[in-house]
Amino acid sequence: MTADNSASPTSALLRLRVTAEADLGALSRVLERFQNLNVIPRRVVAEMGSGDVLHIQVDIVGMAEERLSLITAKLNQSLSIRDAHWHAV
Image (cartoon, rainbow, N blue to C red; front, side, top):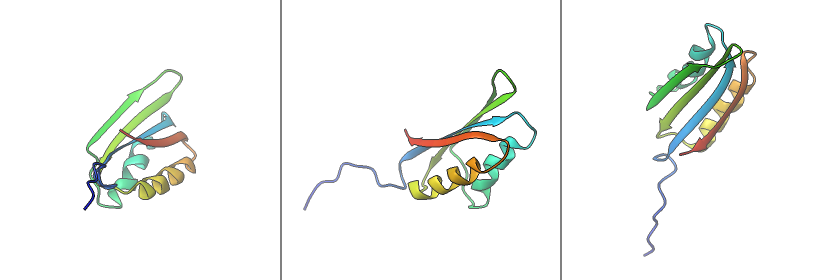
């Protein structure tokens, strides 16, 4: 029997960071990706930056890294999204 101290992949806290143009639909476009999967984020922060930029941070628990990578790739294809990336916290 071996001891495994690492957290399971779906119990890790993952953080999605998005930089978007400050338009009315940017936040909803990010959140709808999780709504479609019936996932409620643990935390969502949206803040206006300088130069009409919206910074969005979404914390997720219980999602596989591969799934979040797909969401990130889809967001990066959106016109109003300047950059989207995720990392484990």
